[in-house]
Length: 377
Image (cartoon, rainbow, N blue to C red; front, top):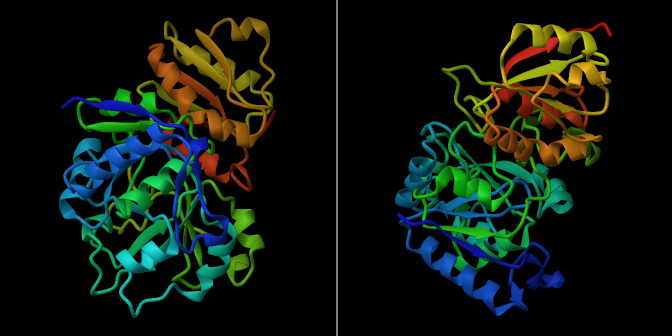
């Protein structure tokens, strides 16, 4: 299978502000962008293949969530375990009700303030699977809930609206690999496995969406992501009581959302994560002594103060970011870049596993081969 890349212009897509998220009617100022999205929509409506496309979080691998054959193409292309559920993406509330929810179904009231605040955007909610839905049960991994969000990226939202297909869309990478934030990352992992990649430039957020479950009491944050725990708590209406689920489900437990059970986000090089290591000098020197004659890269944050004679022992030294927002945005791209340089190990400076750092450390801990912790400086 040949994999084609089509370059589109996200800035050429406009939406009617009066529609809000109730409906979605994209307007294009660039005929080529419209034509390319029409081509992509045709593939999605065929229910035979999945395609790569940009979202504000990471690039997604999308196919109709209403077709078993379409959903199977996602699992096949990624080599993804079948018990790992998929998030469905819709363009509007109207599409959610019209294409997925039966007429008698309604969105639980607890979600309404979150939807008003964060949709479109990187927040996913869990809804009950109704008996008469036409949603493919393959997206739910056989469970009684499904995950859904409205993306804010103009290309993603326009594509979903034009195809009128709710899209099941995990990250567009080979399973366990770092998530893709550029079209070239998708091409690297999935070339020959999918027919088309829509290139809309880099993803802005860099981490996947936050996933919440408001069907439990208290509500739960199942996966931290593009919307912080604090932002969710500040909405109130019961969300101030939200609790955080454990990072990894047991082998026998059902997986409510992606990222809870299997190894994720890992480059080929082994990631060594450093937490609570002060300026990093002692921990880094000790770790270097354990891996002689190895190609090792170092990704720093804002706390490490490594002297030049120690830095000289690394094959590559790079800065992940000075803020958690920067580090989150850069993480997956940096991991992929270092893999291309054939590193054996990647040492990464961690951040506090709370507040804004919760989502970043969730990804880093899942990518890590080993975590080194030292509470003393």
